[in-house]
Length: 167
Image (cartoon, rainbow, N blue to C red; front, side, top):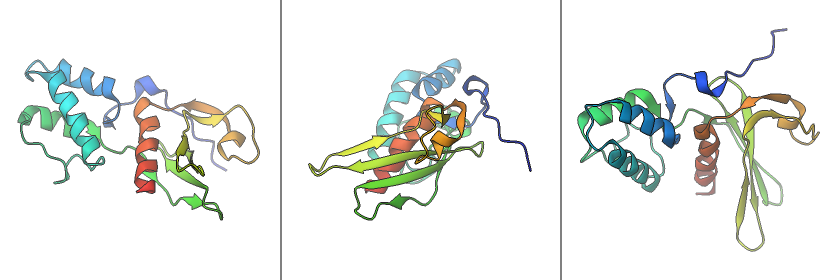
């Protein structure tokens, strides 16, 4: 039996990083003195990503017109739209909940749950850590114990996956 996977601490992760980590995006872009108006470009990129439903950074769906080539190359070489993978989801027989299983880049898995309410409102329960101290037997994450924290981008990617699931 192989030893359990250990979670790499968030600060030591190297590129590519999740594009949804706004602070990291700004830090990386602002560190390059050759890029003019870096914050303006970061904000505009985030707006375009959201508007186009977070396509891959090299997708024709993402409009790079108006961005300096240096900015585009730096972003595409340092970030990914999705550093996680959505595995097949499970919807309850009554359709009120959908469990999303998300695979992280280091092989760990976390769950998110979409809850549909009679009012037409949806709620999303996201994971902020790999594992959990609660020990709930109905939740796979709860039975693992605590392994480590997710990055900002990994947490926000769960929201992107849920929005894609909801259409």
